[in-house]
Image 1 (cartoon, one colour):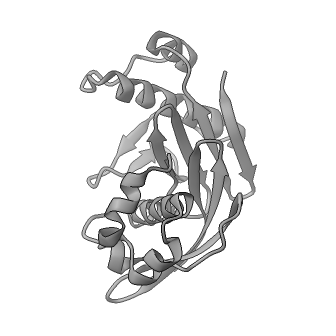
Image 2 (image 1 turned 135 degrees about the vertical axis):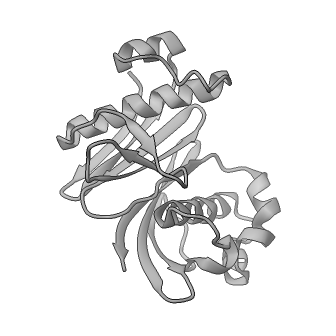
Length: 210
């Protein structure tokens, strides 16, 4: 079973899965009904099943009751019958999940790609664009960090460039990011962690300060 990574502590944990299984194999591992019948795309069906299976594994590791994942009115996933916070991300063939006892969380994974650099002028501030420059991995970390912040916010209507702020950082194999969700009436400070893992970038939530 290709469980690529799992990290847990007193506040919760996160995990990464590398999908190599068929849909039938994933259904067997999940030991539940099949994929949501409304999903027809084969890749999305694999991601859906793998994300549920990975959530179940992480929940077991954290001793959290897991029945199923539901979504709120904004499409944000949550654990049914649980007070824990969660977030999901997928970039085939990988899926990731984060569960927290204390924080609203956001996790995001992405393969570094030149397409992120092409949209940087729309989603990065001038300072972020200058810091990322043409460094592919750094552009990807900024993008994943903003996606994680948006998931923490959990609603709609934020500007990636204006409302989701990431301070410049030195690129390493892993590190911390000082970030913030900047709104008209308040600013929410967020500590994010990033990891360069094989062919993908992972950014997840460590602490949210309201």
